[in-house]
Length: 302
Image 1 (cartoon, rainbow, N blue to C red):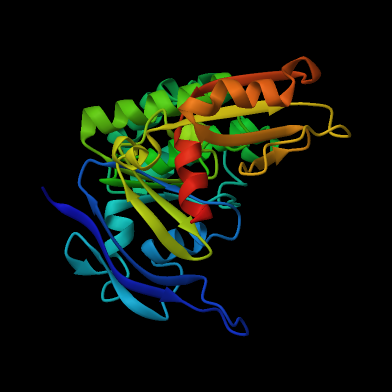
Image 2: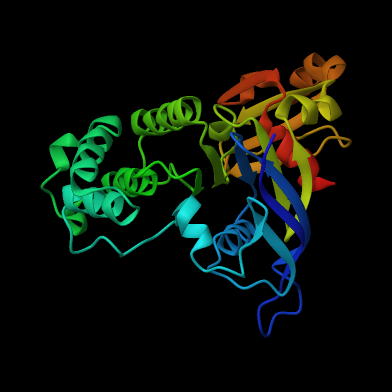
């Protein structure tokens, strides 16, 4: 199978910072993969993908795209990669229809082909009713869908998406994952995306890279990574923030928000832990097998 990205010993250090934003990252991404990059804010995810699309110079190491060093040809990345950053002002003076048409045309399509591509994308991303709307007047969620459609215009071989479901309601998030899966299956498109939401990512990814403090701490298929915690259960508890429960001393928790804890515990101690917590004093609780989010928390804590 063809290697799309071959990242070798990559380092990025910003001026005035003692600690590198990326620390000796080595990673290969195969053609046709759906690859997710997970990590909290500041983990180095966006710095990594900005280097992958040649918008950020690396301090050390190198990045090969389809076997070519991306620093040697400034047109190599845009020829093969559609990149969606978290924020973009590039479309502000265009209507939705114009943004899709001109992007497809600039990517090598004739005017007739670009018109067909525009209409296809309007339908695919369910934004047909916005075709004559100007980008600045769109809601946050509508802008997100437009940027996704623009990124996919002309069917580039690789899509790199930075937080593709930010600003979206649950229905539109579902649409995004379904469309990305469809693009991957129909065109063999390699899809690489950043997210901090492991629950969402689990719906689509085939392999995942987990980042923490600039390092790639784990890479693999979720099913393989889960083996490290396959005897664990995920306990999620909800309680009044001013009255936190008392955990057994050997257990630790991750607070995702005030009044909500995530706890990994051995299967054998699930029932005794619930008894200890006095579940009648909780607002709610959920107990189920480990998820991708738990894998992320496990590797980051290591």
